[in-house]
Length: 216
Image (cartoon, rainbow, N blue to C red; front, side, top):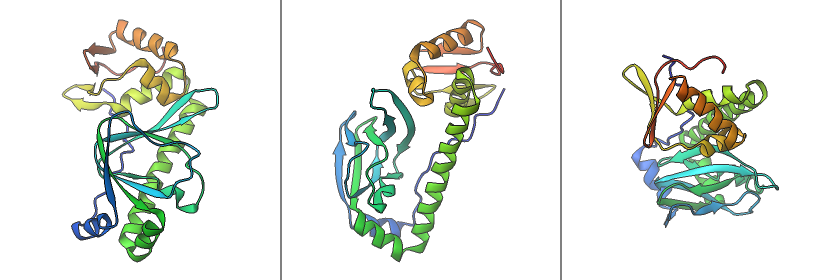
């Protein structure tokens, strides 16, 4: 059985005193599920710290096509790239009810300048996210649709005995948004993998029963 690929999950793990010092500058708001917090192209001056919940970062073209970039959870932050004054480069929507603290960019820049350890953490966060984006670009350039579907399934799966399990509810459209293809193409691939005994659908979960084939 193949091992799942490293998930580019970035979780902030600050010392308590640094964390409290940062939160002293913030105000917290609870956003309901499916609330758009940032729209691509917006000009806003806030950095967002996720206290609880989960959000999705995505891009949308002028003709309405969407590609999901990342999912962030409690402990992550987003919006820090806009400290250069540029418009927002992506949109962000809540996947669940989420409590999010906001901090003005000027205050965030000052905090980074005064806390070298925190600045290093931000740099490492951006490096990890860049590596994840480069991996996605490589997949789009070098893998066919099946290869991108297989890679996504492995990234989302966690080991359970001799199998890999994807516990979150995952539709063909969800995968299509992640890899930049059509829902119909993903549905065909999932149906083929199911019929050939590679994956098993069980309610809201999916189990990878045996090593995925190199191609369909």
